[in-house]
Image (cartoon, rainbow, N blue to C red; front, side, top):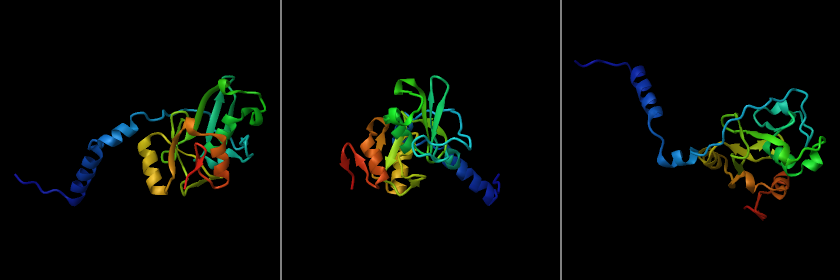
Length: 185
């Protein structure tokens, strides 16, 4: 027998089918090595970024956190300042920590706003999205998200943790996008 279905039922079935369809092969490849989520201490209203002095909790969608093996931690108002700290702890860490003392380094993923492992994340530079301190490294858990963001927000490059250097970070402060010593146009 023929059964009549409401438009709402048919629409719901179509949406369910769409979301249960297998991901395209390229997307599976791009998400295979996603940065793991981290559970790190959240900043309080009194936590200030050790690099710029801004109160971090005001910018929860940009927070980056470094925890140390001695149980202490530092919060930042974005990945850019966290990397400045990481690359020059001698200048910014009053407790004398070194990179060897770091237990975890987390950044907030742009779309999900979840804390992810900074060392495994993908970053976009040169986009039209600005963080609390201007141009930023925009973190993503996988290449698929980074490519989507780059397309939607006119990014200049997708980079990894090991690509970040102080010249790049200082360039971001000046509105320049520098990768491996060369300015991106």
